Length: 303
Image 1 (cartoon, rainbow, N blue to C red):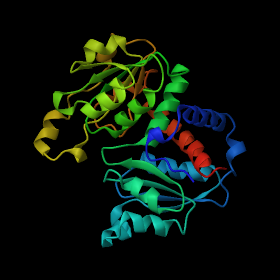
Image 2 (image 1 turned 90 degrees about the vertical axis):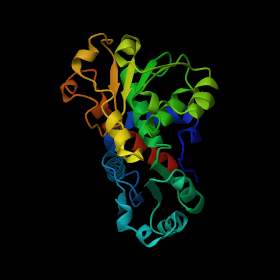
Image 3 (image 1 turned 90 degrees about the horizontal axis):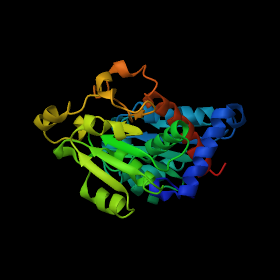
Image 4 (image 1 turned 30 degrees about the vertical axis):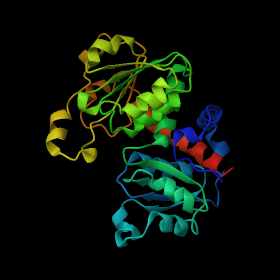
């Protein structure tokens, strides 16, 4: 029995295999409509979510399975003080697989040690968000045809952005990747990600505070929001929240085939005027997330 807690739990070959299955699901949805008949997914969401929770639910329903769970900690026994370990053991009696989101880093890992069924990390604090990374990888694959020799700009909150940390980890295993880190000084990528991932894998990277200056180099621009819920200080949040706002004029120097990505929700860091630009990929990411979660559920349930 396997779980997915960190994107590095899967080999590059396994990621490529998931992408292949997801592409087959897109091409032949009917073939998969009964694959999880009689199976139950438990969605344990201790932190708010729209896309991740609903896409897990949609994924399971489209595979012919069923869903149970909760969408906030207050509606679970966590409100009475139940531990993550006990919750995992309990839910293992009712379901075949768990998707868990939790504000505390490491909580899904603790759940996976105590559950007798596979656990999927659907986001733990500022740490990891591997299924968003799967959605990102499928999007890049479908837009660019592969992962090698791409220049990817990550813009915004690179300090707390778990989606950024997970995606950098995944992309570091491909060849010819160049990374451009665009953020205010206070929200720079943590040092450990630079040393343990970028430098260790000899990934070429540059850091800047100026988005427009590096725009012409980018094949992919991965925008992120400045996350109010990760700040201890409201003043710092208000000062930094509008550091980067992508508007049509800022794309004047961009490549014609740039792919603009965002894990969503956006607040105002991408102008709605860009939504109709053919380079905007963030709503495609949402859809791709459902297909990758379908492929992931099939893999972990060994269907």
